[in-house]
Length: 113
Length: 114
Image (cartoon, rainbow over all chains, first blue to last red; front, side, top):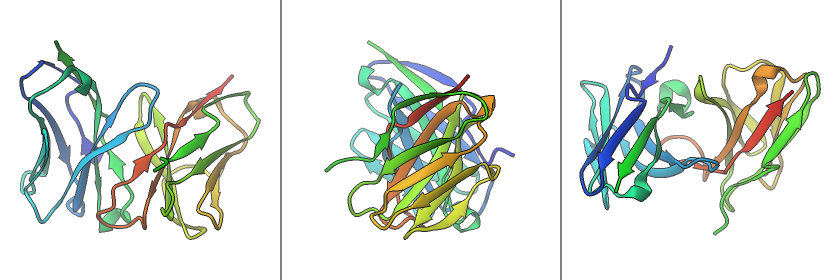
């Protein structure tokens, strides 16, 4: 049972445009959500997080939006840069899972110059 | 500030052998978690250690075990290796684990089983 789903395996955008990566979850006990970026041959790098008491968190070019009623979150990258090309993982945790992270399977973002 | 360090980076073993992987967390981090990454299953949680005690466990067989030392360094052991154990094993640390704590990952150990 996949509790965190990233339905788009890949996404391609032009440099300077907005990238929107989506994530859905099924476990209503999740209350903390994170996005990680992963380059080949490296471990995931923490990007940004949001707790369930908020619906938006912003950090520079990265903004995460949370829609609790729809059990949906998204990561917006504006403007997209070629160096943003990587696999992006959505992750969630909460009291129901003893705060262990549950990951989606990732979305490969390619930003074309 | 040094990041999470995992050793070795690459390992090749044969079926039936056992293997030990090592993880040094970020200084001051007391929670260490281990994950297995495979192409088909993505990142799957193995277990978490805090203050030398296993605090959380995923759905992996007993062949997968771990421990944590008093300096928060952690080791993971896999016995009786199977072909399906070929994966990237990632270690992550956080200050205390628990709610609202981002985890910081090492670069992983790539384990190949022949």
